[in-house]
Amino acid sequence: MAARTVTSLAPLPPGADVVVIGAGIMGLSIAYELARLPGKRSIVVLDEGYLCGGASGRNGGGIRAQWSDALSVSLMQESLREFKAFARRHRINTWYREGGYLFLARNAARRSELEKSVAVQREAGLKTRLLEPQEITEIVPELDPTGVEVASYNPHDAVVFPWPFVWGYAEGAIQHGATVHTFVRARSIETQNGVVTGVATSRGVIQTGTVVLAAGAWSPELARTAGVTLPTHPHRHEICATEPLKPWLTPLVADLTDGLYFSQSTRGEIVGGIANARVPEGPTQGSSARFLALYARALTARCPRLGAVRVLRQWAGLYDISPDQRPIVGRVSSVAGLYLTSGFVGHGFMMAPVIAKRLSRLIARDETSDELEAWSLTRFQTGRLLDGGMIIG
Ligand SMILES: Cc1cc2nc3c(=O)[nH]c(=O)nc-3n(C[C@H](O)[C@H](O)[C@H](O)COP(=O)(O)OP(=O)(O)OC[C@H]3O[C@@H](n4cnc5c(N)ncnc54)[C@H](O)[C@@H]3O)c2cc1C
View 1 (cartoon, protein in one colour):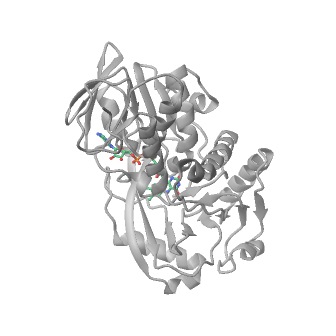
View 2 (view 1 turned 30 degrees about the vertical axis):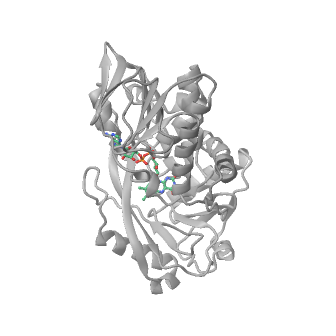
View 3 (view 1 turned 60 degrees about the vertical axis):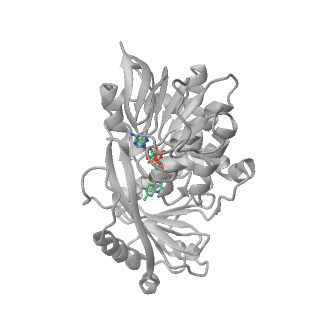
């Protein structure tokens, strides 16, 4: 009988209809959506570690519809509705806080990016507003607007606590018949004549005709075992949380020029990070003092009063970076039965609920969507890379 909880002890089945590699937000939400679709199919999710050990348990929980392209805006409008409904649907507290996102532009290029993006967003029905520097302090009086050329603000963007979504999707998938095995490493994706036949794991082979590769920043090495080159690479992204303060900061503030971002959690901590090009190569999740210095300098320049606040914790996770900073999702044309969900940079958490719906319908019903068409792996073969605006970090 299938285990009724996340398990590291239950034996692996010899075969399954679908094997999902990676129990982050992507793998679990896909397993959940697939398990809910009509039709009986056995679904096994594998993770080499524990739930929340990857980027899905280490991120800032920012979820927003402010994007530069119509496709991402509409995906995120749908996703925000999913995030909002999640607590009731999964009977779990998600600490959903609708404080908005305030983007800052401090040079002409970023100004133009914001102006164009706001036009796209308003066309899609968002309430985003462009703000002059003096208007910024009406939203966050503690911000120093010096050097800011323009800002954009959508009051309906939000911040959540990521862990309940991972747990909720895991529980939901299991309730619908999937099994979730932790501490099982997928070693290779087995193929024969360009068709998926199984997954070799640290505890034996599972035969299957369908594999969803949802191993986040670790995906390229597994894709290689099936003869597929994924053009993504891991990039360490550090983040930290301060001691809790009385609530005072409503939106998540993001500076498009240096990649600084910070928000206040429901527990009062200021949680934030910054873009940092100088990090070690490879899938390294360690922390550095250099990050703290970089972040503190940028944060206190933007918000001088935060200079007196103490940092309590810092940690790091992996961004999964694609060449055009846009996702790579859908089937792999050269390997029948292999599906990807990669390249989400610092934004995969917010997109997962909708990506999971799209990908599960592709797997179960061969139903495609605008996202799957636009974000397929083939764009790197045809050279049709996408515009990568409104990226933080
Ligand atoms: C510090 C930080 C802040 C971020 N902030 C935000 C944010 O505010 N908003 C947002 O939307 N996104 C944010 N992101 C990005 C977001 O967290 C990721 O895009 C998203 O979590 C990716 O989910 P995933 O399931 O693809 O990957 P992961 O959560 O990394 O899951 C992949 C899983 O695969 C497992 N795995 C790897 N190799 C194997 C193997 N061989 N066998 C079995 N299992 C394996 C890993 O153990 C891991 O659990 C942030 C990321 C970081 C690091």
